[in-house]
Length: 426
RNA sequence: GGAGAGAUGGCUGAGUGGUCGAAAGCGCUCCCCUGCUAAGGGAGUAUACGUUAAUAGCGUAUCGAGGGUUCGAAUCCCUCUCUCUCCGCCA
Image (cartoon, rainbow, N blue to C red; front, side):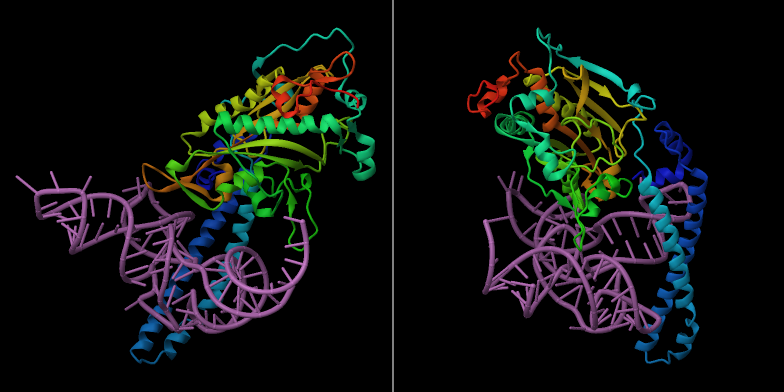
């Protein structure tokens, strides 16, 4: 949520900022509603004050043994007036809240303008795409060749956008996950964390996935519905929910491996072949809970941490800053890391590192007791993929392919592969 | 799944219809005293929202959540959630 005080006090600035995203914010309608809220709230609170006063004097009169009948008649219609005022106020407040929950985060000043991914700005590149002296295969062909990636089997079980993996390939994905977690824990000071894969609506409201993006989520039909997490960002970030941290507890840095579940509604026709875009995929996620003073630096460090993984795997990549039209709902600023895929001859997203500032914290009531003032203030939340394991597997397959169709095991993964040098057909 | 107990401020813990936002203790902050890493005395110490130039006042809300009864609810009633104990079941 955007700070309601800011929204109210500097509506034009907020509207202009949101307009950069292509988000049309009806400031006039909002201000009219807000004006109404203010009046209703003042009225309601005055009535409540009146009621409290009379109740108090009735209590005092009764204590003195006086006749309270006349006092009771005097407040006769108060209850009804109050009830009317309260319900009107409640209606307006929930309308306002619906508007506020639907507004995306304010953009950081250094988010570039732009309408689509075409306008994202490259920050840096690392590594050189490898030169092949044979015809390059994509991961689908390679996976079939080593008899490890089976989309037909998956579709018989679950339909489109699922994969079955076997043997060395399945193990390679597990090796990637282990390697990533070990790296972040040992070198980047992350705490390995295990979290629920099913969460309730309020957790998703906190991260900004709800109420606007329900269609992207899988939901159970149980009496109290659960949602399958679309990313470990949801449970990890909610570790800060309803808490007041001491200043010296922050930053907290959590790393978790989880499967991620996405309905991919609205992505029909995109990446339908292969394992790029699935309903279920594995990811190692990084989340930081921080003070406002820490978040900017941590954002850079988190991006570096994700880059480290790719560097150790010797996978060429580039880092881009997402433009205003491409950045996510809850983020103030996002770096995407795109890995080189020889099979597609282009860079594809493998990590997304965002600073959400206090946007999610406000929804979650995540706070920290300021070291200076002793007062609670909102924490900053950051999340990043460190990195997507399914896509990392694709990247390793395509970048490490050999002329005979086998896949060489990257050096850093060998210890996780039982000394295996290459994944090939059994 | 069955039976029972419970949920109060940073913590412990009183409080069963009326000046209770809430006793007391602990912790923390400030002051005083004390020639010293002790003890004692005093004051203060929740959050959100509204109003406001104001982190000053004033008002409103909050004692797990939601609803109800009442002029008035931490206290009574209903529903739900969570925690604990015992039993059952189970990876």
